Amino acid sequence: MRCLPPIGAGPRRPAVRRTVLAVAACLTACAAAVPYGAAARAASVADPRAATRVLPAAAPYGTAARPHGTAGRAGSAGSPSLGRGRPAVTSCPEPPLVDGGIPRGREYLTAIVKCLNRSWSGHFARAGLRFRAPTVRFYEEPVERVCGVPWPTGAAAFYCTEKATVVFPLTGDWIEGRTDLYPLKIAAHEYGHHLQSLTGFRARYEARARADRARRAELNRRYELQADCLSGVFLGSVRGSLSRTAPDWTALSEAIRASGDDGDDGPRTHGTGAHRVHWFDRGLRTGSPAACDTWAAPPSGVS
Image (cartoon, one colour):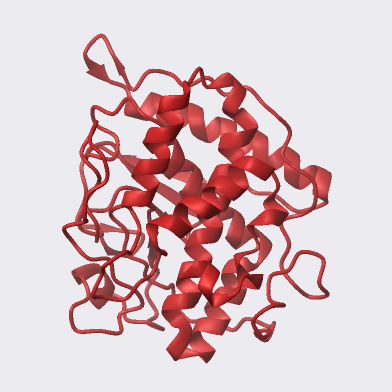
């Protein structure tokens, strides 16, 4: 797990470690409850500072893993693809997270998810891809179990892969009292995991992770960095309607950089701060999902 950066403060070294795939004794209770390949459903836990990645139950995927450099390349025969072109520029003004002293997290996230649905469904239709909106669940407080596994301690938001559900807790530093773009980026990142499920990237990733235990952390970084990039694609498509200033975007880059794996002594599952910023900015700058092919990047580009 990771702690969120303090509101209004610059990056600082995370206090708690993220874990992956239930391969070490120091894994969190969530990961330990669902060992890799177990029959239970699992949650893909959020983005930046509070993320535990737990793979869902092993299932037969018909496509064999391709070698590095070919898997996931858009347009390659038998490869997953997010389609060519860019999501259309759309309007997505942010509602207030706090209005009259009252938290409005549910209203804020509901509006953002509607924007995500509109943007990505339009892109999928133009690309000839099948689209299905995710289910969204809100929790005022963490509960004992969600999606069939223990609630990931300290998690911001997460995606339940087997139920195609984005889970948003409405409490915690990731959303309470924030005035920056961080909650929007997290929502777009978790939605990116849904897109990976729809297009086959998740299935390919899981098949490769099962086949190559030694590279699981690297493969997880490719998976998470792709979601970072896709979140940048979305934010770029709605940027003109966000009424944000240059310092807001600088602050977001700093928060993303602070969420990296730098200095961790546990499994490095999400990438260094520099690489997280790089892939987010790549999506933001290009506006193209095809630019988010972390699977074709050299290992040095996803460290």
